[in-house]
Amino acid sequence: MLGAFLLGVLTKRANQTGVIAGMLASITTMLIIKFATDLAWTWYVLVGTVICLSVGYVVSRIFSNRGMPVVETTEDTV
Image (cartoon, rainbow, N blue to C red; front, side, top):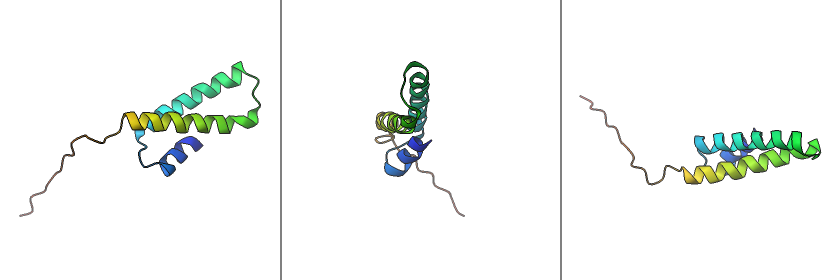
């Protein structure tokens, strides 16, 4: 959760796809770390946040909406 919050606050390019991908990558990695390594629990927050931020930022950059045509709607006022 901290990684998703910081991604939205610290970057202007964050989007929904990037945040979801970052959170999924973070929780998957944290489950692997919990059951497969002897890393102390005090490092979990730092590792999860860094993974969420980095994966979320990269995915947000890949799936950015820049360059997509913007559809403008106009309303007729009579």
